[in-house]
Length: 201
Image 1 (tube, helix red, strand yellow):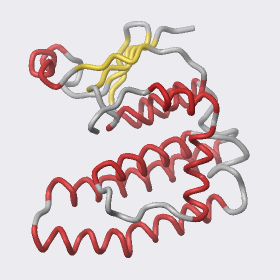
Image 2: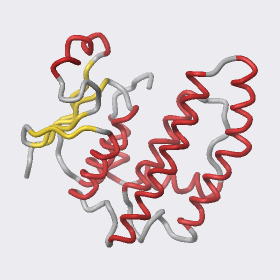
Image 3: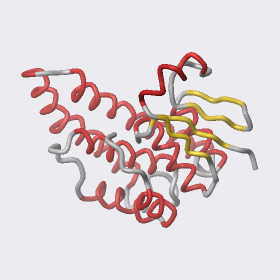
């Protein structure tokens, strides 16, 4: 078994889907968390100059979702066939795009513009994404196929993180809430969440 070392800040952010994928797969890894004040000294010494990165027996991978997909393949959470793999990729991209919109609203807009963008997100963006995800989910337990996959894990991460910095946004109900809870009830995930460090992001 290779040695895996995941390096990221002491927060969820862009590394949490990777962590959940390791945990759900039952693959041991070193969760190396660094504090923000250490980053300026570390940055010039890293492969790409940004986080997260993953060391696999000393070899480096960068880009958060590329790493998550790699770990999902290693842990058999990337779909049972090429079609399922493509479905998972589609869902991951849909969720990542939604997350980017939320981040821009919360951190990069102010005043009246922010109010208008929040309204659009809550009334249009979020419902449209959920309608699309429900087409994937149908009456199944998970978004793709008949078992937990990277798609479900990324869904959990994105909705949890959006909820952290937009506490007054109505996010989950119905099938989407049940899916979120189902991911959290997976034994390995439940144990990880119970012991996860409390962080501001």
